[in-house]
Image (cartoon, rainbow, N blue to C red; front, side, top):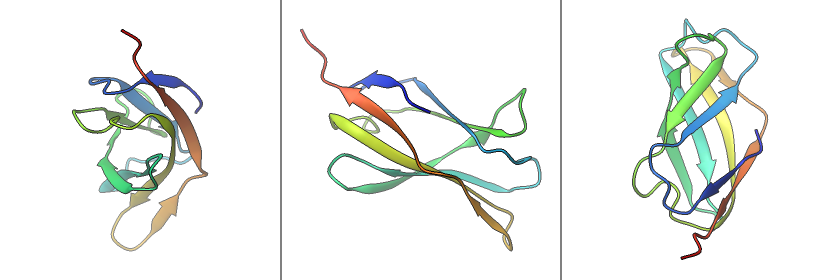
Length: 96
């Protein structure tokens, strides 16, 4: 995943291909490191048409920093944990 977003974008879908069937996992998350090194967790969902894709739609405060964001997909069923490779995307300043 490599894409560019604008600071404070709301309603943008972040999609991560996990390479595994997510159907059996009760907890789907994206573990995110913002440019300031702040760590946050976004609660994700399984894509409606692809069982191996995790999605998250941004809300206010998610993309409040300019710079590179890193994330790992995280899925657990309570006893098994799967984490994905690190992905990244860039958030740019809005020019007005």
